[in-house]
Length: 454
Image 1 (spheres, rainbow, N blue to C red):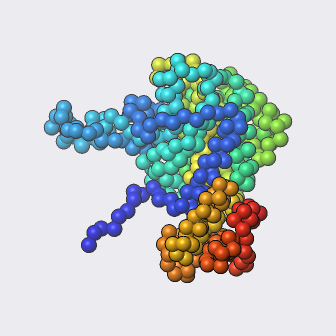
Image 2: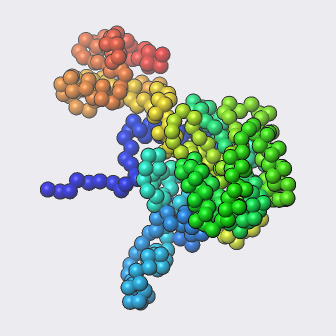
Image 3: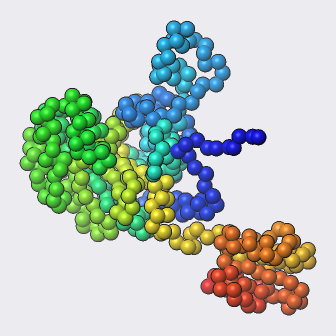
């Protein structure tokens, strides 16, 4: 007996109904991106490992899916190297390519490779899958879609403001209540400086970024494990747990970070973004969250994260400012800022809250029942006119029992069926049946489309 087929953990199949929902998500985000002047690009699913490695921090590098070289990848390897069982070193020999971890690093590579074709500032969006060799769990997948928008070639903080407007617009259209969380890596750098651990900024940000997942005690334990002094950890506590309004937090930070020019610059940038947004009347809350760190190494300024308020799930959007990313590819001095919508988590949130508009997820609107060859020929002519009017319609392909055809309509959520028998053909009309109410009425082909549009 053949083994039952399966798919890798952390990946999913999507049914037609699920794809209708996903396309609603993509089309909503795409339409908002267009509204703000962003243009679409695509990059390959796989990149050279030299492009990907070292851009996501040590933890991120471990989550890269590596692609085994074709051909004899043992050639050039010594017996000593093979017997060493050093996985990371052997992977470097076996693999030159990897699946992309996100869309930002491939975008930076794209900008460098196509710099002579681009006009700056360059506003692009990308909606494509990414892969991470993470442990699958609720809301976390190994293959998932990101919907990114980035602006490169501009230092203006108005770009950050506009991206937050995009976030607010998208989630308002979805009907999802969210909290938009903002911080700044310069503030985090200033915090590390004033507690005397400036060289441990990466360890500090990686640890405090986990606060809402593992709690304060475990964050402090991780900081100790990274060699951060008890005195420094103690100084960090009131900053991490700072409460109050955004204005109050900024006022406190100005005092706390008074001896850190970098930290004060971060406060200044954050204040501009928050004050500008407050004048624009966003529908969702914007909060300065000092525990927000976003562990990716390439962020250098403002950082963002979005949390759904009515569903227990991780971040559903994130992003930030990066000043040095293209520099690693030989193109220094190009600043960028971007956001990424987590389409798969948004899919789960919309499902849990049942927020999909009915018209967005419905498939076929009208099914013609097949009573035989002559009836099918007549139905095909009416069907052509209905489709021209923009009605999603189909003819059941086989002449079989009506019960089976009605079952097909019910199983596929088709709200109306068209019945064409001898009497209807003689009158040049169609019997239209509402599958929800059971109501039937005789209509002309011209009336059919308008009846469904109502």
